[in-house]
Amino acid sequence: MKFHVPDMSCGHCTAAIEKALGAVDPKAVVTTDLDTRTVRIVSSLDPADVQATLEKAGYPASPA
Image 1 (tube, rainbow, N blue to C red):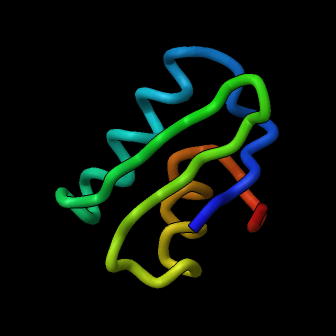
Image 2 (cartoon, helix red, strand yellow):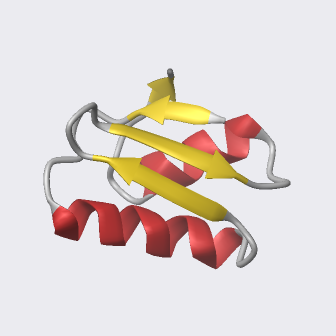
């Protein structure tokens, strides 16, 4: 699944996103792209749960 995260702008942001998603799914594979401000996640989590996790971490997201 892929999400657009407009507030993701630096390495700290990507680390925070990876940490938040890893906390709810340790097996998740998270790939971030600062240029396009997108996050690609391979996870067994429901997309709505991933989006809620991103928002709880302070990064509102929308499906990309």
